[in-house]
Length: 242
Image (cartoon, rainbow, N blue to C red; front, side, top):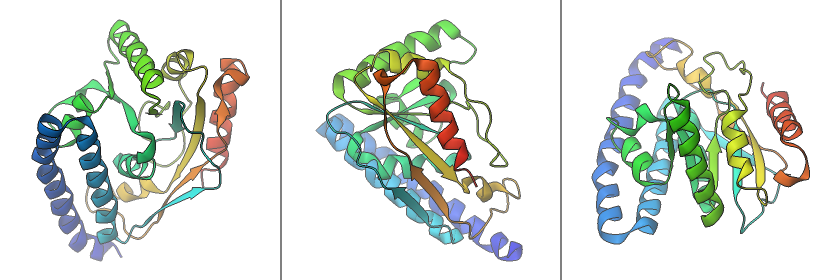
């Protein structure tokens, strides 16, 4: 299996990079000429192809969603974080909710397609070394989420788990976002197996471990104090990590 991964990993890497480079000018054209809705459609297409590109490694991605998500309100998707490959499927499967990510500001430059989307697609780019900037950015982001009834995506662990074992959830980011979205819902998501893509390190890549994203019951933000909301969200996510 590992020998095969040496053969398939370069094919996947070239395909993945090709998609990022291809969709970068397509995003610019869509955003500049046709506006935000066209840009969102291009980003959705990019996420679809990135998800399908993982099939080169024998990795399908499955969404398990047994709950009807509320409409016409802001949804705060909260997930554990295992790898880069958590992001395209969330963007694709929840595209109807116009998901906007909370990301570190370093990702806002230098990465084809990704950086452009983060800068122009409504994401919150925060500087972890500058608390004042981070809070101000999150407040503005939370207000935009509320005003436009968008979905927000946040990984409270703050960094990826290289072994799948979850880290403790930080409260600050989620607390700010929920403060300005009292009429919305938190939607807990559990991601399994995406860390296995990098189980050998950056090269070769892991093969054949299906990634699953499980959607848990939405929690009304104003139904309980924030500390209880955080505890309940963290508990249900971690209980379902394999």
